[in-house]
Amino acid sequence: MPAKMTKFGVADDVQELVEIELSNARGMRVRVINYGAIVTSILAPDRTGRAGEVTLGLDRPADYLAGNPPYYGAVCGRYANRTAGGKFVLDGVEYRLAVNNGPNHLHGGRRGFDKRVWTVIDPPGTDGNCVGLQYVSPDGEEGYPGTLTVTVHYTLTEDNALELEYEATTDRATPVNLTNHTYLNLGGPGTKDVWGHEFAIRAPYYLPTDEGLIPTGEIKAVQGTPLDFLKPRLLGAARGALPTGYDHCMVLDAARGTEWAVRVRLPSNGRVMEMFTTEPGVQLYSGYFLDGMVGRGGAKHGRYEGFCLEAQHYPDSANRPAFPSAILRPGQAYCQKTAYRFSVE
Image (cartoon, rainbow, N blue to C red; front, side, top):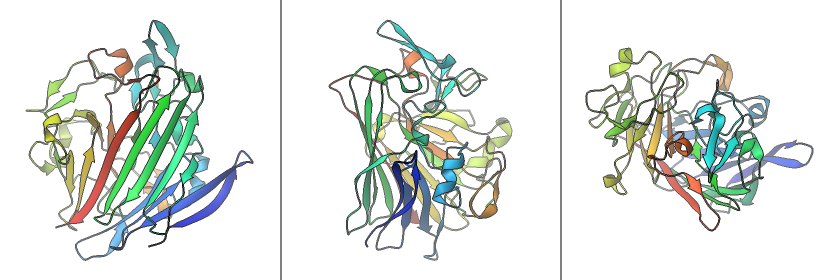
C-alpha cells in the first residue's frame, strides 16, 4: 500500500516538518514524524480483527513541538537513560553534559535528539512500508564530543512488526546509546493502567539503582525479586513491592539468540507484542512519572497508563568500566536492530 507523507509545518523558518504513515496489507498502520523521529501512532488489530491505537501520544504532529516531557514515541540520544552527575571521563578528559534530571543527565540533555528535526533521507516508496531519517549532532552539542551522524529506519513488515534499525558514526570518541521511548498500552484508549498485561522477559539479571535511578554498579539475579519475569506473570502482580513501579534496566540473556527478548500479552483483547533486540539491556518502565499531561483526544495520562520497553546499553556506562562499553570511535559503526511484532491469540 502506498505511504502517505504530509507536511505539517516548518521549524526555525527553514526545516520542513512531515508526518509519514506506513501501512501494510493486514491493516496495521504506523505514523512517524521527523521531529524527534517520533512514533506518533501504532494501530494494531485485536482478536476481532479490528485495528486500534496501542500508544500514548498527542493529538496532532505539531503538538509535539510545544513540549513532550514524557518523551512520547521519541528517539532518545546521544545517550539515553541517565548519566550520573552529568559528567564522564573519556581518554583522560572530563566532559560535562547538560543536567536535566536532578543532578543527572537524562536522554541526551535539555535538547536531545527527541527535540531535533531529522532529515528524511529515504522517502517511503510505493510499497509504503519503510522510511529513513537522519540527524547530524555537532561536536559539543549538550556537552558531547565529536560530530555524530545518526540514521534510523522504520520498517513495517507484512507480519505486523515495526522494525527499527539504527546506525551511527563519529569523528571523535563519544558515548552513544540510542533508544525509542514509545509508551504502549495494548488495551488502547481508556485503559487506565497497564497492570493487567502479562509479561515474560528473558532477563536473568537486572541493574539495581540508587535513589536517583543511577545504577549502583551491581548486576543482580532477578530470582526472588519483583523483577523476575522469566516465567509469564502479570505486570501488576508485585506492584506493592515497588512504590514507584518499574524503572529498571533488565539484563537480557544473550543465549536467547534471535528469539524475542520480551513478550507482552493482554488477555482481555488477545493482543500480543513481542520485542526483539540486539541490545544487551531493556529498560522496563511502567510510567510512574506520567503526571496528568493532556494527550490524544483530550485524555489525561496518569501514572501507570503506559509502559515503555527501551532497548539500550546499560545506563551510566561511561562511568562504569565493568559494564559493556558504549563508546563509539572513529572508523567504527554503531548498529542496533529492534523490532516490536504484534499478533493476537
